[in-house]
Image 1 (tube, one colour):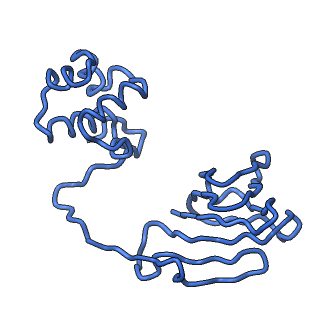
Image 2 (tube, helix red, strand yellow):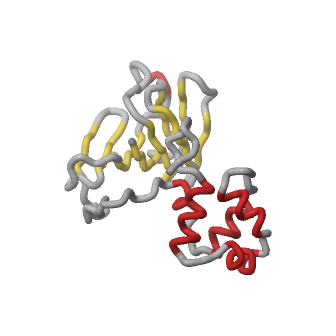
Image 3 (cartoon, helix red, strand yellow):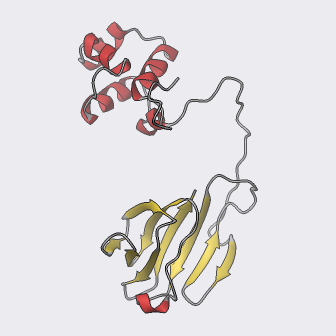
Length: 192
């Protein structure tokens, strides 16, 4: 399935070929839809060239593929969707309040989740309000919903983030955030 034995990510060429064939298109069909040479498409599918983002985007669009699908592992034969879903309304979510944060845990109706999403109001205004770095297993995405924050980490210079900005990082690396806006900042965190 994935020709790159050193990566857990799916192989881009394999993914493109799989989608193309699943939709019943030949290399010639994709060439006519995109203007990308058949030989180039074939080389991409066989991992003989590393395509530019523009070419991948044109091919994906012609095959009606959302770009993130190219980097998802395909469903294994026999794996059926579980049909799990949980909705967290704006006024719902399990709350956890500390001196620094107010967390609102999301999707609390599901157990054994692979992702742990929560919305946090950040009350801390300076680094000294923390007794130590925050560290835990996994990786996390921080997406700023409101206000601005400074993200501190033990291996990088502090980073100022504003509404709509995001950061993805290794959670084992010491990290913490402080609100730098007049009001408390609000962030969406998704931990894996």
